[in-house]
Image (cartoon, rainbow, N blue to C red):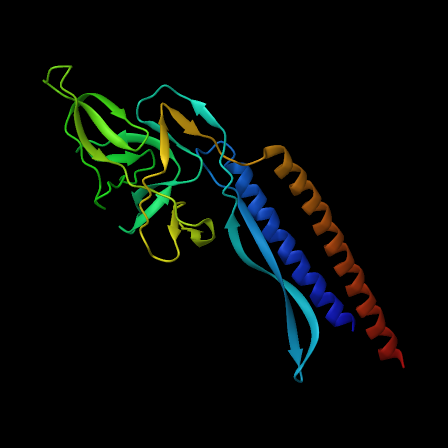
Length: 247
């Protein structure tokens, strides 16, 4: 019985450590543009012995995301975009596949490719990366349309070049990729013409720093309690073994 209790305490301590790791990662991204806080979920798992559940443990099932929009702050920079309400900006992932982000801090690369500040090419509604000519001025409309005046052209000659892929797949289908982007688990590319962006602004992280700090402190205390109980249980087992060896 004591071994079963010790095992339950061990799985509980491991789950708390996982929670602490996620909380620390959220705190580290409290100032990351449009970051979506991780939310670990746990599951009770029965362990079978002779066809019957002898004990239960807890395991981390996955790390979903909190898709609550962060606060929008004005920057005045024409290549900064904030998604208004629900929706995503379509980009090309590190594996070349379409992916999604709400990080609208954009820049134009040396070859004219529009990309995020971490180097992901922004996709147009045709599905390919957006490439722009040298521009004197640039504006991005609420629907993602990119317009501007090319270098050497009259300032009144404004040309529309492309339109950013804006999508709004169901939140339950969105999964976080290893490169920090998100993907639609259904594999579909769902362009949504109703998604709107605000130029000259960025979305902040939705991490509640104060709440995360309180959560981290609480989990540290719980971990100490779990390990303390494990130590006590180990001493009890050792004592029992000593008594039995004297008989």
